[in-house]
Length: 268
Image (cartoon, rainbow, N blue to C red; front, side, top):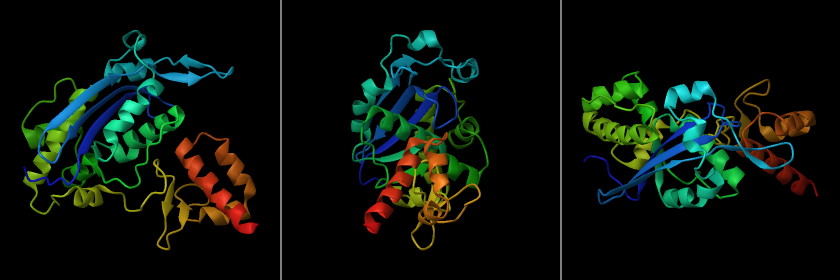
């Protein structure tokens, strides 16, 4: 195996109620933890998605039919399953002290998992971890989907695609095959994380905030794109309220709120 590990690497995949990082929920989480000695352990969680209703109560969330059509998980399948808050500590323990890998995980799975952890009140710091996105490596090399990647690199048909467990194990196999196929591809987690990282270093999980070349946190979208957040908070105070009350991931809101707090403390 060409891949070199200095600590465990957790491959994981989510099946969800949709693709909105701020609003949608996990219905299935599967992981395969690869250890430096080559051993593996894994597990799949089925999750009953929940939301907080107008009365402040946690209630079951309906899985939209269009989402069920993709992953095959329906309300009936999860009605007796634990909620995410009930498994959050166990999931966090799996990732503790490990780096992370997935397929399109930097753009979707990791941000959405971070949102679920925040709602559950469980600390999930990913900023000091290496994050490998197999999708990014694949699209830079071959421009294909996971099923095509599996066929291309592993010579196999991906059975049960869009099952979290099948996708997780396929992603692991694809990464190992990629490191064997491309001599110029790094063989360390740090190198692969750098190779699959976005052009900008993000300051949040959803990529709405990034660090500029001076190390300041800037917006990556909207009318203030590339403008430091701290400058916008002074120039346009209403923009802060719009974001905090808007349909943005909680992690993004927390980063902006912390910048505003630091401004207040500095002005005292």
